[in-house]
Each structure stands twice: as C-alpha cells, then as structure tokens.
Image (tube, rainbow, N blue to C red; front, side, top):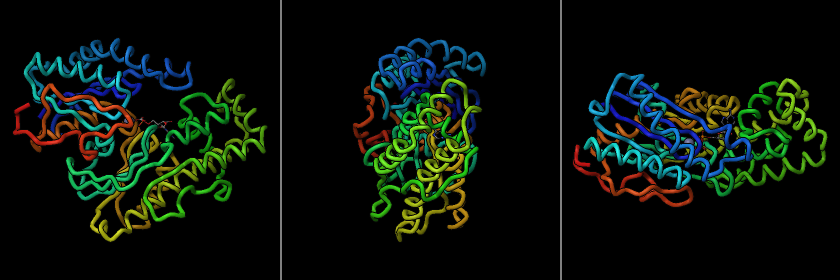
Length: 364
Ligand code: KG4
Ligand code: ZN
C-alpha cells in the first residue's frame, strides 16, 4: 500500500510517501526562522506559511519520487491536535487531492503518529508502553494496536518540551530552547539534587512541571550571573557558555528526564501492564540526550526493550503520518471528506484515535 502523508499541525510543512511500512520519499519545510523572530509560534503566520509551501512541496515530492497521485492508494492527513488554522490548510489540501483523484482519506491523530513512528525503523510488538514528549504534550499511553491507544497519564500544566523551552527562555537563550539546552547540558555535569522531580510524590501517572519551573526560577534569581551568561550565548553562540551554565542546564534536563522515567516505571509496574513487551518514546523531547539515556536506564532495569525513533522521526514530519494512515487504512479505517480538524485543547472524538467508527476497506 502506498500512502501519501500530509503534516501541517504546527510549524513544519511536510509531505511523505510510505509504501509497505517504509519511507519512499519525504519533504519538509520548517518555519522555525519565521517564528524565532517572535519567540514562539505565531498561529496566523504558521497557516500562511503552510499555504505558501504546500503546493510546491507536493510537486517536489512527486518529482523526487517519480510517482504520481494515481499510484497513491490512500491519503493521510493530520487531523489534530495542533493549531486550527494550520491544520485546516493541510486538511483542505488533502481533501482536494482525495476529491480530485477519488482516493480514500484517513485523518490521523498527530500524537498517535508520533508514538507509532518508530515502527518505520523497528518491528512493533504489542502491547507497548508509549511516552509522548513534545512541545505540547507529555502523555503516557498503553498501545495494544495501531488503533487501540489508551491514555494513562498526561501533564496537568506544561508539556516537557514547554518546560525545556521556558527554562531556556528564563536563561535568555533563543527559541526554541530545548535543543540548545540539550547542547549545553551535554557539556555539563548534572547535580541530581539541584532541582526537584516534580509531582512524583503522588501515585498518579500524571505530570506537572510547574514546581520544577518555580524551583528553576528561584535558583536563577539567586544566581543572576547565569542569565547574563545566557544572553551572551544568545549573541556569541554555545561556545561562549561557561561550565557553570552547562552544569545548571544538565541538572535541569536530568530533573526532566528522571521525572519522565519515574512515571514510566510506575506505569510499567501496574499489574495490568505486566504484559507490556517494550517501551516506546516519541516526540521532539525524545531527541534529548538525557531523556534517551534515562529511558535506556529504565529499559535496562526492567528488561523491556526500548524503541527510540531516530531524531528525524522524533520531531514533526509527514513520514509518521503516512505510516500511521496506512496502518489504519489496512485495518479498515477511513474518513470521507466531512471530517473536521481538531485543535489543541479540544478532545479528539474518542481521545483514542482520530476515528469514531471504522468504514469498510476502500470506502472513504
Ligand atoms: O514533537 P515536536 O517537534 O513538536 C510538537 O510539539 O508537536 O516537539 C517540539 C518540542 C519543543 O519544545 C523543543 O524544544 C523540544 O521538542 N525539543 C527538545 C529537543 N529537540 C526538540 N527538547 C530537548 N532536547 C532536544 N534535543
Ligand atoms: Zn508533534
């Protein structure tokens, strides 16, 4: 099955072709530079940029793959969650293609696509315990099948990526700070006692990073020199960072990474999850060096294999959308033209999948 995937939920415009679980070709245009001028993603600008790039990227994808829409069996598009205007650009484009070429259309839950993406690189054996850590989400899922994902825990306030980006901002580092924080942290030595592991005293699998942010802010106020240094790094690059700045970044990232792994361990220890065969970690923050290391330590401790996607598959891309769309289509799921996009903060129809009811194969 050849699936065309379209992703426009945030600030990456991406298209990809996936055939039988392997990427054939993918194209991506990032808007990071545009939004960096404003210190965060500006929704209206994101929609305009998607609209500006989508057609040209589609042509580029078809040219590079030497394929045409005729060869595509199913079209998959991100339904949500994301920025509504941005999602609508992708959905309208996908609906146009589906209508013009009379192709089945599958609307994909962006979060599920992140979690399943590792299946492009390694075989997935269910049930899995999945951790999605991105700029907008920190979710723990039990995954029994591509269309059976159950949310076990979520953040009550900031997502892990947001907690990284906000700490970077406090330091005066440029947006998006998570990657820079990672780079600086790799050169530092973490102090495991400097920052708390927030919201881990409760039995719940939910997260809350506000306590960590407050602790970090208090620490920085007591050490204003670090913020001055952050500004210097902004101007002169990461080489200008002192060992003490790198150490504090490493300590903060360790707190985030260990909080994530503590909750995952708790989820793995639940009696109903004893049958879980492996751990999958996905989303932008899964690219973080300390998060990857903490998850590897958890995997070693529990004897459950760790499925970590390559860094390209961690951040937003359309390969994961095409892959998930194909998995769903193979299982008989499909949408017609009437589906609506679902913005961030609004529940997807069943919160488990983008889809409420399966349709017969090929009937979109
Ligand atoms: O999944 P993603 O690309 O976009 C969505 O939010 O859907 O995740 C973006 C988030 C941002 O908060 C970014 O700072 C963070 O992932 N991020 C990282 C790293 N790479 C991306 N955070 C820490 N370390 C990284 N290496
Ligand atoms: Zn994402």
